[in-house]
Image 1: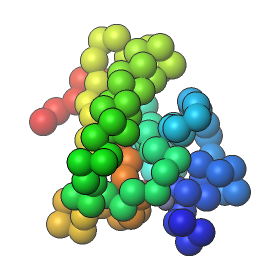
Image 2: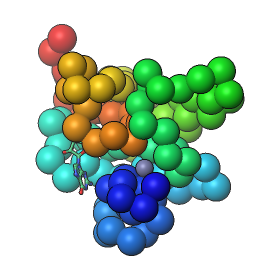
Image 3: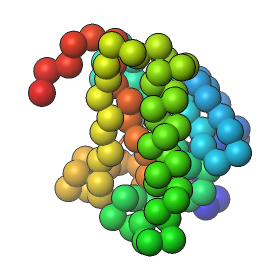
Image 4: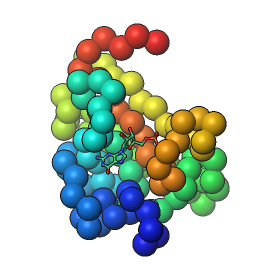
Length: 111
Ligand code: 5GP
Ligand code: ZN
């Protein structure tokens, strides 16, 4: 999608503080961190939200969670633990309409 902020970040057209990249996924530090470590993981493929995923996206969603695990463990060294959040649509607090997983950590997180 040409008009999507996260598509532009994944393509390198808008700069970001990159943590990880492979053929299908891109991860970068959130510009307004809500915890000492706050990273966003996105698929390079534009998918608006979790609510817009179909059965055809099952493999992508599974792979994305595997990459979240890898990034939290190997890249961010969050072996002590972390939180994974997906905000879904406006009512769920989603502000950027390109599916993304928040990885939050670096302190004990209240719930
Ligand atoms: P949402 O509320 O949609 O689940 O989360 C969007 C996140 O993207 C927010 O935490 C916000 O701080 C982050 N964000 C918005 N614009 C940018 C940007 O241009 N660069 C980066 N790195 N993060 C952004
Ligand atoms: Zn997009």
